Picture 1 (cartoon, one colour):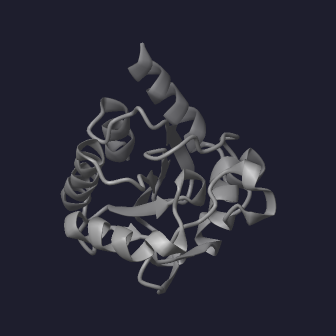
Picture 2 (cartoon, helix red, strand yellow; picture 1 turned 180 degrees about the horizontal axis):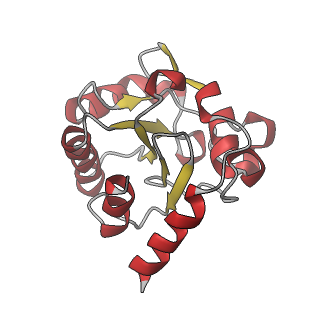
Length: 181
């Protein structure tokens, strides 16, 4: 039944257009480089909020992200985002950079910490305003609810999936979104 809903949702979404383009946004990498999302036009995007505390389950999540990046390297760009609302601070940047980079390849774009939630008001990063507002993305009106929250954007710039933290990287739901043309 859930596969039918996913396929029906994908059919419905394929005919709609976002109000604002995701490609007008940019992020800053955790290393300090400005990264315009226009550079990834034509690729699917997986935008995921990162955990802040090192633990075995969080290491496993990072390893899964790295594997996914390698598996879909020609068609997918992963943008991994630490969130201030989840505990990111500038004081933690060096340690988090070392942890993230010890597991994630350079192909995974890790951003500096940003405000990801609507409750942050004007501090919410413009990319997350786009991801969380149907008025901007044309499809979904939601909010981030913790680390490992996932957004899938098709290679044409349409937000096609929002997956909660409990949805695993190796889940059928995410795999179906990434393999759908």
